[in-house]
Amino acid sequence: MSREFRLTAPAIRVAPSVLSADFARLAEQIAAVETAGATMLHLDVMDGHFVPNISFGVPVIKSLRKYTKCFLDAHLMIAEPKRYAEAFVNAGCDHITFHIEVIQEPRPVIEHIRSLGVSVGVSLNPSTPVSAITNFLDHVDLVLVMSVWPGFGGQSFIPDVLNKVKELHTRLGPHQRLQIDGGIDDKTIGLAAAAGADTFVAGTAVFGAPDPPQAMQRLHQLAIQAHKRSPENG
Ligand code: DX5
Ligand code: ZN
Image (cartoon, rainbow, N blue to C red; front, side):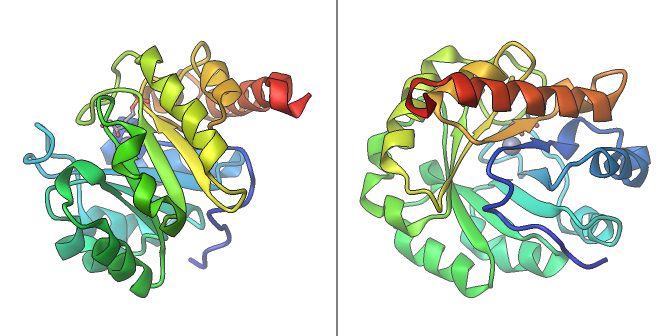
């Protein structure tokens, strides 16, 4: 299936996290959210080393790619993102986010991922400060602020990370995305949007809801409303 969407548009979006879907009905569940307007799917890849859990990898993504035109956003919670990035791009990912906590020299990793023809993101665990990424911030397309400890869906949002979202919002350019991931639901999405996040990962709040398409649309509306209310948007 051909791909239709880019990282930069639409400007505000909810990316359903496949981690919370029913893996036996993946194609069906993805089709439902895509028909309802999803343009990005978030793919949580876990290796049991960087995080204490194992999720899914290349073969699942390769199969999924055949059933969706959505922008495939890979969140690599793995110890060696540079080693595996090419396999994920070959499987059909449109974007690769790596964690700064596992990387000593980010520039070669960024250049490598970019050379594969996809956009690049860097992610910060809840305790990792913005200062860990400031000297190469201009070189990434997306910053992912984790609002839970990576490894599992269904955890509670950590409000302290909003300070990092606010700081990053002032530092990032209009071509760069500010993504938040973990515990995003009807109560927290507005806080994240008002702080400046523009891309909202939601797993449980979408696929754990009785009506996932409706839940996703409601989250999207709440994010848009909170953005409009944020001070800098008048
Ligand atoms: C956690 C993952 C998240 C997860 C979010 O390690 O990075 O993307 O799917 O799940 P919820 O929305 O349930 O917190
Ligand atoms: Zn994620």
